[in-house]
Length: 292
Picture 1 (tube, rainbow, N blue to C red):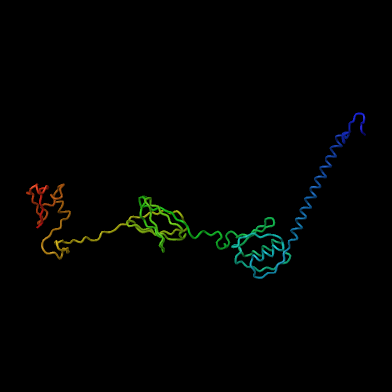
Picture 2: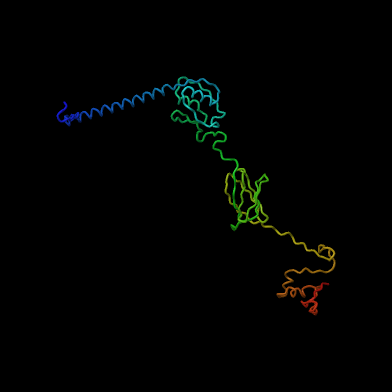
């Protein structure tokens, strides 16, 4: 009832006791929780009904795998995602009636080294780990760039080493730091290292892009010394030479001790004469040598 004298309007519930107000609030909360539970149950039922309706019927013999995927897409609305190389040259025969999506996919991909993953309304097809790979998928590139350094047995860089790709004309030289580089060579190529003072060496790349090589010094044997005699007109072996001649070796040269090599030659062989009575005007050394 409105209090016309004061103009005040009574507040609803203002006259309720606290215990009654609390019961009314609890009742309202229970109703809201029940409504939320019924809504969730209804959504789950619709979802389950949708999945239950995805029944697939197929009767296909020796067809490509992508054609089977097209038929499944048409019947279920699911979209398949895959690379062309993944299903290339793969064929299958399948005969199912009112089968679920997972049952159909298990039959399709059996023995194909493929697996699937369902995400929402999409089906991702991928190669199984450890299974056969499609051509060009996950393979290492056939050509690589190779860099390296060549050192000797002491660890010093060797300049001028020829690095050749065996069986081809591709080659390069090491720089002053012993470093080299070869671009776009086969990952299984064999490199040949050659140098005038080093032993040749071969190394298979085996996919490596950085290599280090240590070369050994080449040891050459000296050929036999051939003693010949120069007569002034021709050079002949000593066996064919007539007359007298002497070979000055280390033993003869060390018979006398002197810092002057000419003094050490004097008197070691006949036919070699030293004339020291020479005028210094025409010969500053004061020595005349003659061979008879």
